[in-house]
Length: 245
Ligand code: ADP
Image: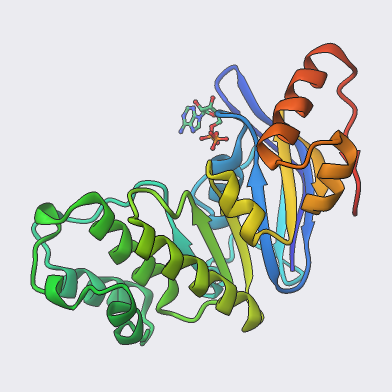
C-alpha cells in the first residue's frame, strides 16, 4: 500500500504539488494522468526518494519512507529517460544494475521475450531508441518487485514490443503487483488501467475508474473525457472530484 499525505513540492516559485493525498491499495494498474507539467513525474520521484518533498509524508506498507532507503528494494522503476554509460554493453549494464541493487534478478525470460538476444554484446550507444527502451523494461521487471513504477513505458517501442509490454503488465498485475503508470497514450490507459488518478494544478482532481470518468463527463473516449475536464475546469470552480476513494 502506498499512502501519500498532504504532499508539497515547489521548485523555486513553481508550486508543483499543493497538498496531494493519495492512497493506492492492493494489486492493480493505476494510471497517473494530467496535463504536461502537472507534477506526475514529480510525484513518482518523491515516491522513489529522488525528489525530497517540502511537506507531507509518503508511506509504503505503513512505513514512512523518510530516511529509510530499504523500501526501494521493493520497487522496480522505468524512468522516462534512463542514463547509463554509453560504452557499456547490454550484458554489462544488466550486471551493473544487479550489482548496485545487490539482487539476483532474472533477466533471461525478459531478454527472450523482447528479442534482445542479438543485442546482448552491443554497446548502448549503438542501440536504437526502441531497443534501449526494451533494455530499460528488462531492468525494471527483472527483480520481481512488488511495486512497479512506469514513467512513459512505451516510448519508442514498435507495435510488437508494445503488445509484449501490455501482456507483461497484465501478468504482473495478476501476480499481485501494484503498478503505477504515466503515459500520453490514452489507448494504453483504456486497455490497462484499473483506476485513473488525474492531477490538475498541483492536486488530485479526479480519482476513479475509466467508467466513472466516462459517466462523469458523458464521453465514451478517455481522450475526450480529459479534454472535457480541462475545458470545464477553465470555466468552473476547482473543487476536487473523488468518485472513488
Ligand atoms: P509532468 O510529469 O506532469 O509533465 P513534472 O513533474 O515533470 O510534470 O514537472 C512539474 C513541474 O515541475 C514542471 O513545471 C517542471 O518544469 C517542474 N520541475 C520538475 N522537476 C524540476 C526540477 N528538478 N527543477 C526545476 N523544476 C522542475
